[in-house]
Length: 362
Image (cartoon, rainbow, N blue to C red; front, side, top):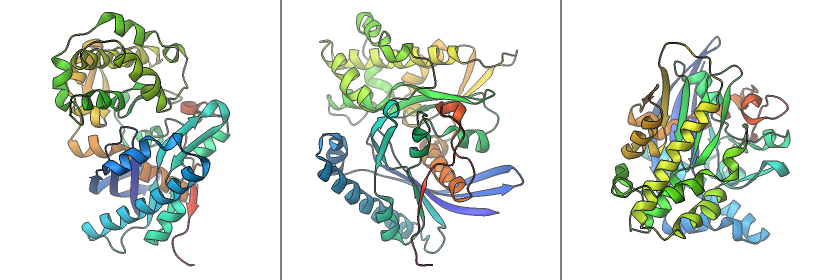
């Protein structure tokens, strides 16, 4: 059976809207995938500001933004369909939305982007609110990507995503995954102080030096002492870590260098906490997300993980893994199959997460 699905992902780094069109085929219990088309539609400055400041809005203004962003997403999907001549080929859309509020301890999470508006704009069935059921069951609601890694990407021991937040998955029994630390969101905010959208290849960080006092302060933050399962909200990076860094008084280059070192240290510590059965064979770690293109950061991670083979795959998978897996998670919801792993999130049970919006009259 073959399914043709569009996946939408907006990460905390605010670099744009990732869209993929992928085919998924299932034979028995074995899934395969093929990403056919993909785009990253950059946000305008206006949309960056709206998403960045969403949590400061009044309730009514927030809900208006939720609706407006949903219609925006629908229009961007229509643009993607037209650009790639996909009319009448898309069976469904999965929209992750843009995470604003995420407080699992209060059993609350929300992602901007009204999926009813997406369905209305496109006339295509939409699955959204992928994290809500798990959070309602007492889970962290994150990470949710591991179900796709488990079913679509066999052959790796670890999966590292270097997005706005860095998270790790491990092919343990049961499966293990959790958020490690803020990553690209903080690096990008620092780079923007120097007039750069991001630190290409890590060249700015490489030109700086590690400031050990700042590194020690960062490594001492309470979140890193918590056991997994655990997850992070965006404001940990933007409201707690970023001010600590900029108030240090060091040059931006030194701050970038120090924060890259912090990411590498925390990734190493996270992997050391995971109880993965050891063998003589060298473990393989698949690295994706925008940070995989930061060669300096990858070098620093490898420095702390000499016993692990870090694999940066071809560009298509690096850029599109998250959006592709979001498409897959929505497909599992449509098939009414479990798409969130309780061993990862800490909820009471595996669950079928997602709300379904019908795009056409039946």
